[in-house]
Length: 214
Image 1 (cartoon, helix red, strand yellow):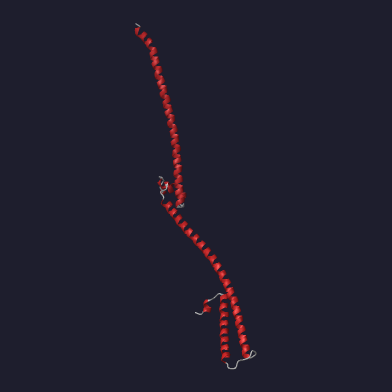
Image 2: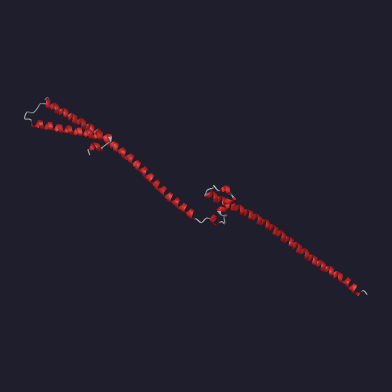
């Protein structure tokens, strides 16, 4: 593969182009100098050969000067490219680190999700009404998803327990009232026994008089 096809950056392509021209110019100038040195009759400074050599020498110096300018521009471009590459590498490193952090966070969240899914929740131990019976009692819940259906069953269990607790409290109040009534009646019976004993004790003299009567 030719180097012209390998190098695609315009600045470097210009460098290669001018370098080729300078090389060809130098080769031509060397050939002309060799011919002039081999000629037994040296040409004067105003001869056609001398003019041709001066022309090729000026062209060579022009190409070399242009090549130096392109080389300087290529160096500056290389520095800018290095700086841009360094900034891009830093950004890439930052993004790579951020991506790694996201991977770690994803793994952490997946672990938390698995822990939550395998956790033995308290609601799983509740004596909830079976799904079939719940749907028979509440057919409007037939289209609910699993989470909504579980929430509705828990709410139903809560309502049932609150109703039972209210009934228990009412029965407890009735029990306490009955205990209080029984205690009052027991106290009344005890007082009645005392009054009866007093009455009997008070009636003993009268009974004795009746027994003495003829």
